[in-house]
Image 1 (tube, rainbow, N blue to C red):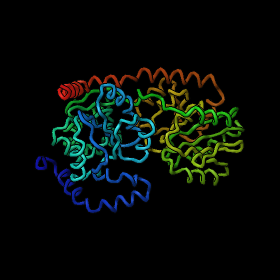
Image 2 (image 1 turned 135 degrees about the vertical axis):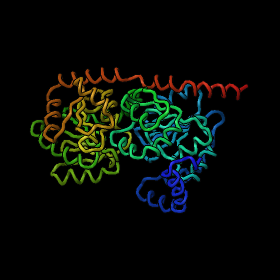
Image 3 (image 1 turned 45 degrees about the horizontal axis):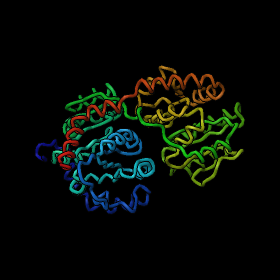
Image 4 (image 1 turned 60 degrees about the vertical axis):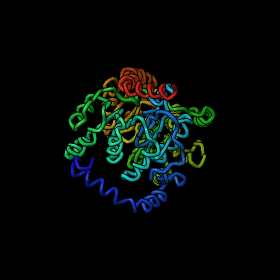
Length: 434
């Protein structure tokens, strides 16, 4: 395998092998940063306390929360076929989401560090029958070692962003060697398909975005009722999945809007919950009053900004507010997924940086289902108009709901593309039971 690889991958494999002695130091550092689960660090080295179940095993890999949630509908359908599922991801937050929102029989493991030794240990233990990689989390050793074992590899919900494409284009031999190991690439859009084909994917099929078919996130009814009881009568804005640099802008927007809506409450839900304390300090430094949800506090009548620094509660806050600002879009992060907010009845406002979901936001904006705010002043204007005009909110929601319905169907198209592989697994199951 190694001799046929481009020089970049040969060097990468040697370096990743040589770095194994440094793994304990890396793990210690990540443990200090809260980026590893101390009870499960062995999984990063390919060691697992879990037993591989009998029969065919479908391995699904996604980088973090967004990718894992995108696969929820697909996992449900595969379980209905009595297939065993191994789900890997790389973050503590994604592991917590799996534990909270997925069935107990879904096996979750942290993806091993991308060293040939750790990857081989992982593959030896789990012996997957089919591997589905979500979007674009392409670890070279994971891919190359899987392909060397003749494990069928499929890229699902494939996305190649406008930032990644030029970078990979400059390393065309490298990315072509990796993408060429996938038997099929199921792309989110025509543009994604063109980019994957240009970079070396052998067989590209446009199936759409699985995130459009994901069910709305749940909410605890009792917690929702408590929040509604203490905020009843107040205009509310939720700023969802915010990133550094956005909270200051949102605080200024709140201060301006509060002049027109004196009892306004802004709920900030940071993308990374561990930033809650820092956000609260920023809020208070700006002369506003903050309340932290991680302290099990509810907003009071004097709370200006409610910092919802907990995990897995976006479904709660989407149900609470009629207007949602989607974070990661005032700064060049690329924007967060607006679909869940739409499905839970929110009118959407976003910044100019939405390249992670270009097709979705373009369709929403074109239909009037979302509003772009390119500047802080525009953000105030758009939020204020929606807060003041329930009819405008209803029109936007009706338009966004139509867009989501029109763009849906990725799950069925993905299952159709996977049918040859699933048929083979069902045949193996039948032979095993014979």
